[in-house]
Amino acid sequence: MDKDGNALMVDVSGKEISERSATAEGSIRISPRIAAAVREKTTAKGDVLSVAQLAGIMGAKRAPDFIPLCHPLSLTGCRVYLEMSGDDSIRAECTVKTRNRTGVEMEALTGVSVALLTVYDMCKGMDKGMEITGVRLLKKSGGKSGDYDRTGG
Image (cartoon, rainbow, N blue to C red; front, side, top):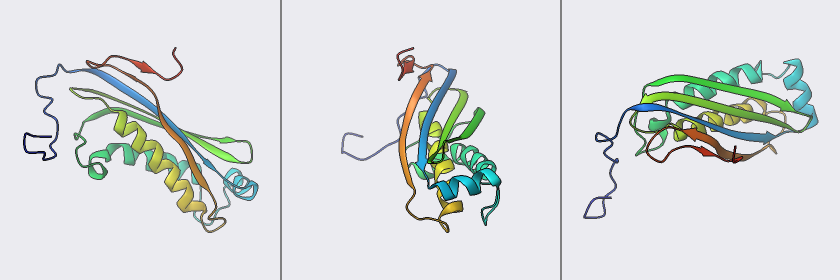
């Protein structure tokens, strides 16, 4: 905030450019019926995991469009991975990389969130009781604040 209490985008022009990466994860709880349809690719809207993967990448690239004070960054890489976890959930993971003055945690978290929201959208006709859970940063590297690893590794 400025001296008058107004919101502002943090000035990162004095920071060093460095390699930065971040990985986030989250899950969506689904019914066995949805799990079967996702595995068999028989949902009304098509291949859920492939569409959600692409949506997650697109979401990561557009994080500043959703988060007002998030810096627009040129991403050097983005990978979204979705996997079935038994018959009751789908796990998503997003890793984003850049060479910049600020980190990509928000991009990774946005990528996971958009991927999971896409699963919800594609399956809501079968069951609206799905629940998105556990969206969180797993790790980040680079920058002045150093590395972070939720697992301690």
